[in-house]
Image (cartoon, rainbow, N blue to C red; front, side, top):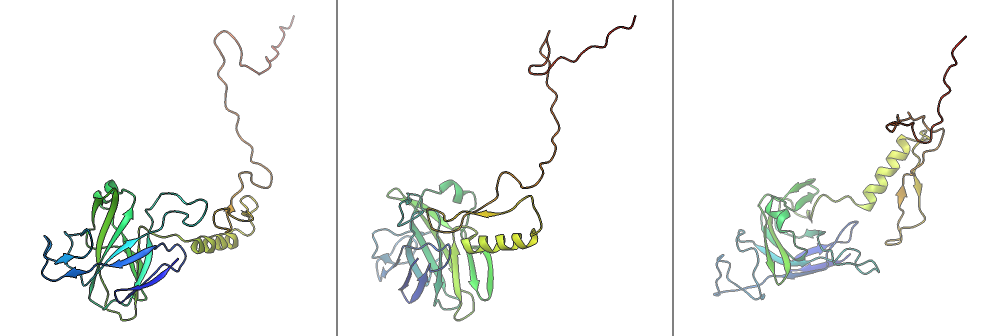
Amino acid sequence: MMEIRCGGLLFSSKFDSGNLAHVEKVEYLEGEGDSAGNGGSTASMVFGCSLPIADYEFNVWTKPDCADTEFENGNRSWFHFSVKGGMPGKMIKIHIVNMNKQTKLYSQGMSPLVKTVPIRPRWERIRERPAFEMADTQFVLSFVHRFLDCRGATTYFAFCYPFSYTECQDMLVQLDAHFAECKYLPLSSLQHCSASSRRADTVPRKAQGKPRPSAHRARKCPKGGRAKGRKEEAQPRDMP
Protein backbone atom coordinates (compact mmCIF):
# COMPACT_ATOMS: atom_id res chain seq x y z
CA MET A 1 0.00 0.00 0.00
CA MET A 2 1.29 3.42 -0.87
CA GLU A 3 0.33 7.06 -1.25
CA ILE A 4 2.12 9.52 -3.52
CA ARG A 5 1.50 13.06 -4.73
CA CYS A 6 2.40 13.46 -8.39
CA GLY A 7 1.56 16.16 -10.92
CA GLY A 8 -0.77 17.92 -8.50
CA LEU A 9 -2.85 14.76 -7.85
CA LEU A 10 -2.83 12.38 -4.91
CA PHE A 11 -2.54 8.69 -5.87
CA SER A 12 -3.25 6.10 -3.20
CA SER A 13 -3.64 2.37 -2.65
CA LYS A 14 -3.88 2.60 1.14
CA PHE A 15 -7.07 0.58 1.37
CA ASP A 16 -8.15 -3.04 1.31
CA SER A 17 -7.36 -4.71 -2.07
CA GLY A 18 -5.41 -1.65 -3.29
CA ASN A 19 -2.44 -2.18 -5.61
CA LEU A 20 -0.10 0.58 -6.76
CA ALA A 21 3.70 0.52 -6.94
CA HIS A 22 4.86 3.73 -8.64
CA VAL A 23 3.54 6.80 -10.51
CA GLU A 24 5.26 9.15 -12.95
CA LYS A 25 3.83 12.21 -14.68
CA VAL A 26 4.21 12.19 -18.48
CA GLU A 27 5.83 15.45 -19.58
CA TYR A 28 5.58 16.85 -23.11
CA LEU A 29 8.00 19.34 -24.66
CA GLU A 30 6.59 22.18 -26.70
CA GLY A 31 7.43 22.07 -30.40
CA GLU A 32 8.20 18.36 -30.64
CA GLY A 33 5.11 16.81 -32.22
CA ASP A 34 3.96 13.24 -32.52
CA SER A 35 1.32 11.45 -34.56
CA ALA A 36 -1.34 12.16 -31.95
CA GLY A 37 -0.67 15.88 -31.91
CA ASN A 38 0.18 15.88 -28.19
CA GLY A 39 3.71 17.25 -28.58
CA GLY A 40 6.92 15.34 -27.96
CA SER A 41 7.32 13.39 -24.73
CA THR A 42 10.32 13.46 -22.43
CA ALA A 43 9.65 9.78 -21.75
CA SER A 44 11.44 7.16 -23.83
CA MET A 45 8.15 5.87 -25.26
CA VAL A 46 4.70 7.35 -25.88
CA PHE A 47 1.62 5.21 -25.21
CA GLY A 48 -2.06 5.51 -26.01
CA CYS A 49 -1.67 7.80 -29.02
CA SER A 50 -5.10 6.74 -30.33
CA LEU A 51 -6.84 8.11 -27.23
CA PRO A 52 -8.04 11.72 -26.83
CA ILE A 53 -5.67 14.42 -25.61
CA ALA A 54 -5.83 14.67 -21.80
CA ASP A 55 -5.24 17.39 -19.23
CA TYR A 56 -3.35 14.98 -16.95
CA GLU A 57 -1.26 12.01 -18.05
CA PHE A 58 0.58 9.45 -15.93
CA ASN A 59 2.49 6.20 -16.19
CA VAL A 60 1.52 3.78 -13.42
CA TRP A 61 3.22 0.60 -12.18
CA THR A 62 1.54 -2.13 -10.15
CA LYS A 63 3.00 -4.62 -7.69
CA PRO A 64 3.05 -8.36 -8.47
CA ASP A 65 0.80 -10.81 -6.65
CA CYS A 66 1.82 -11.40 -3.01
CA ALA A 67 4.44 -8.64 -3.27
CA ASP A 68 7.03 -8.39 -0.49
CA THR A 69 6.24 -11.88 0.81
CA GLU A 70 7.79 -15.30 0.28
CA PHE A 71 4.86 -16.07 -2.06
CA GLU A 72 5.60 -13.22 -4.50
CA ASN A 73 5.31 -14.27 -8.14
CA GLY A 74 5.38 -12.74 -11.61
CA ASN A 75 1.64 -12.22 -12.05
CA ARG A 76 0.80 -8.55 -12.61
CA SER A 77 -2.81 -8.09 -13.70
CA TRP A 78 -4.54 -6.59 -10.69
CA PHE A 79 -4.53 -2.82 -10.16
CA HIS A 80 -6.73 -0.82 -7.81
CA PHE A 81 -5.94 2.74 -6.77
CA SER A 82 -7.54 6.11 -6.18
CA VAL A 83 -6.88 9.60 -7.54
CA LYS A 84 -7.81 12.78 -5.71
CA GLY A 85 -7.38 16.45 -6.57
CA GLY A 86 -8.37 16.49 -10.24
CA MET A 87 -10.28 19.52 -11.51
CA PRO A 88 -13.92 18.76 -12.36
CA GLY A 89 -14.43 18.30 -16.09
CA LYS A 90 -10.73 17.71 -16.78
CA MET A 91 -9.57 14.48 -18.44
CA ILE A 92 -6.92 12.13 -17.09
CA LYS A 93 -5.00 9.57 -19.16
CA ILE A 94 -3.42 6.61 -17.36
CA HIS A 95 -0.97 4.03 -18.71
CA ILE A 96 -0.53 0.80 -16.71
CA VAL A 97 2.91 -0.04 -18.05
CA ASN A 98 3.96 -3.34 -16.45
CA MET A 99 1.02 -5.72 -16.81
CA ASN A 100 1.11 -9.33 -17.96
CA LYS A 101 -0.02 -9.84 -21.54
CA GLN A 102 -3.81 -9.33 -21.77
CA THR A 103 -4.21 -8.85 -25.53
CA LYS A 104 -7.06 -11.33 -26.04
CA LEU A 105 -8.95 -10.01 -23.03
CA TYR A 106 -8.94 -6.36 -24.10
CA SER A 107 -9.40 -7.08 -27.79
CA GLN A 108 -12.78 -8.62 -26.91
CA GLY A 109 -14.15 -5.60 -25.07
CA MET A 110 -12.64 -5.73 -21.59
CA SER A 111 -12.43 -2.31 -19.94
CA PRO A 112 -11.24 -1.05 -16.53
CA LEU A 113 -13.71 -0.02 -13.85
CA VAL A 114 -14.20 3.41 -12.28
CA LYS A 115 -16.24 4.90 -9.44
CA THR A 116 -16.33 8.36 -7.90
CA VAL A 117 -16.98 8.84 -4.19
CA PRO A 118 -19.28 10.31 -2.98
CA ILE A 119 -21.38 11.20 -6.03
CA ARG A 120 -21.17 7.99 -8.09
CA PRO A 121 -20.10 5.21 -5.70
CA ARG A 122 -21.13 2.25 -7.88
CA TRP A 123 -18.55 0.64 -10.15
CA GLU A 124 -18.99 1.09 -13.89
CA ARG A 125 -16.90 0.51 -17.02
CA ILE A 126 -14.67 3.24 -18.42
CA ARG A 127 -16.74 4.82 -21.19
CA GLU A 128 -13.92 5.43 -23.70
CA ARG A 129 -12.59 2.17 -25.10
CA PRO A 130 -9.05 1.61 -23.76
CA ALA A 131 -5.94 1.16 -25.91
CA PHE A 132 -3.28 -1.51 -25.44
CA GLU A 133 0.10 -2.40 -26.90
CA MET A 134 3.25 -4.40 -26.26
CA ALA A 135 6.44 -2.53 -25.35
CA ASP A 136 9.66 -4.41 -24.59
CA THR A 137 7.76 -7.61 -23.65
CA GLN A 138 5.51 -5.58 -21.32
CA PHE A 139 1.78 -5.18 -21.89
CA VAL A 140 0.70 -1.51 -21.61
CA LEU A 141 -2.92 -0.61 -20.95
CA SER A 142 -4.01 3.01 -21.59
CA PHE A 143 -7.36 4.58 -20.75
CA VAL A 144 -8.91 8.00 -20.18
CA HIS A 145 -11.53 9.31 -17.78
CA ARG A 146 -13.13 12.72 -17.32
CA PHE A 147 -13.40 13.81 -13.67
CA LEU A 148 -16.99 14.37 -12.54
CA ASP A 149 -18.28 17.74 -11.48
CA CYS A 150 -17.63 17.41 -7.74
CA ARG A 151 -14.79 19.15 -5.92
CA GLY A 152 -13.03 17.05 -3.34
CA ALA A 153 -14.23 13.76 -4.84
CA THR A 154 -12.04 10.65 -4.95
CA THR A 155 -11.95 8.59 -8.16
CA TYR A 156 -11.11 4.89 -7.97
CA PHE A 157 -9.82 2.72 -10.82
CA ALA A 158 -9.65 -1.08 -10.84
CA PHE A 159 -8.83 -3.98 -13.16
CA CYS A 160 -12.26 -5.55 -12.48
CA TYR A 161 -14.91 -5.60 -9.75
CA PRO A 162 -13.06 -5.70 -6.40
CA PHE A 163 -14.16 -8.11 -3.69
CA SER A 164 -11.99 -7.22 -0.72
CA TYR A 165 -11.12 -9.20 2.38
CA THR A 166 -13.29 -6.82 4.45
CA GLU A 167 -16.28 -7.36 2.15
CA CYS A 168 -15.76 -11.13 2.37
CA GLN A 169 -15.73 -11.02 6.19
CA ASP A 170 -18.87 -8.83 6.26
CA MET A 171 -20.66 -11.30 3.99
CA LEU A 172 -19.67 -14.23 6.23
CA VAL A 173 -20.96 -12.41 9.31
CA GLN A 174 -24.31 -11.91 7.57
CA LEU A 175 -24.40 -15.59 6.60
CA ASP A 176 -23.59 -16.62 10.18
CA ALA A 177 -26.48 -14.52 11.44
CA HIS A 178 -28.90 -15.74 8.79
CA PHE A 179 -28.09 -19.42 9.32
CA ALA A 180 -27.47 -19.23 13.07
CA GLU A 181 -29.67 -22.27 13.82
CA CYS A 182 -28.58 -24.35 10.86
CA LYS A 183 -26.64 -27.45 11.99
CA TYR A 184 -25.59 -28.72 8.60
CA LEU A 185 -23.27 -26.02 7.26
CA PRO A 186 -21.25 -24.50 10.14
CA LEU A 187 -18.37 -22.19 9.29
CA SER A 188 -15.01 -22.88 10.87
CA SER A 189 -12.02 -20.59 10.90
CA LEU A 190 -8.38 -21.56 10.56
CA GLN A 191 -5.90 -19.84 12.85
CA HIS A 192 -4.19 -17.80 10.15
CA CYS A 193 -3.62 -17.76 6.43
CA SER A 194 0.09 -18.36 5.84
CA ALA A 195 0.35 -15.75 3.08
CA SER A 196 -1.27 -12.77 4.81
CA SER A 197 -1.92 -13.69 8.49
CA ARG A 198 -5.64 -13.29 7.98
CA ARG A 199 -8.59 -15.49 8.80
CA ALA A 200 -9.37 -18.17 6.25
CA ASP A 201 -12.98 -19.22 6.73
CA THR A 202 -13.95 -22.62 5.37
CA VAL A 203 -17.05 -24.77 5.04
CA PRO A 204 -16.34 -28.32 6.28
CA ARG A 205 -16.88 -31.13 3.79
CA LYS A 206 -18.73 -33.20 6.38
CA ALA A 207 -21.92 -31.70 7.75
CA GLN A 208 -22.86 -32.11 11.40
CA GLY A 209 -25.89 -34.12 12.37
CA LYS A 210 -27.39 -37.28 10.98
CA PRO A 211 -26.37 -37.91 7.36
CA ARG A 212 -29.06 -38.10 4.75
CA PRO A 213 -29.90 -41.57 3.40
CA SER A 214 -28.65 -42.11 -0.11
CA ALA A 215 -30.22 -44.30 -2.75
CA HIS A 216 -28.18 -47.32 -3.85
CA ARG A 217 -27.32 -47.42 -7.49
CA ALA A 218 -28.27 -50.58 -9.34
CA ARG A 219 -25.26 -52.64 -10.38
CA LYS A 220 -25.04 -54.22 -13.76
CA CYS A 221 -24.76 -57.98 -13.71
CA PRO A 222 -21.94 -59.35 -15.88
CA LYS A 223 -22.94 -61.62 -18.71
CA GLY A 224 -23.38 -65.20 -17.54
CA GLY A 225 -22.80 -64.41 -13.86
CA ARG A 226 -23.98 -62.41 -10.87
CA ALA A 227 -23.14 -58.99 -9.57
CA LYS A 228 -19.72 -58.78 -7.97
CA GLY A 229 -19.71 -58.50 -4.20
CA ARG A 230 -23.40 -59.33 -3.78
CA LYS A 231 -24.58 -62.57 -2.25
CA GLU A 232 -26.78 -64.71 -4.41
CA GLU A 233 -30.37 -64.66 -3.17
CA ALA A 234 -31.83 -68.01 -2.07
CA GLN A 235 -34.36 -69.42 -4.52
CA PRO A 236 -37.67 -70.71 -3.14
CA ARG A 237 -37.95 -74.50 -3.06
CA ASP A 238 -40.59 -76.32 -5.08
CA MET A 239 -43.36 -77.69 -2.90
CA PRO A 240 -44.02 -81.44 -3.24
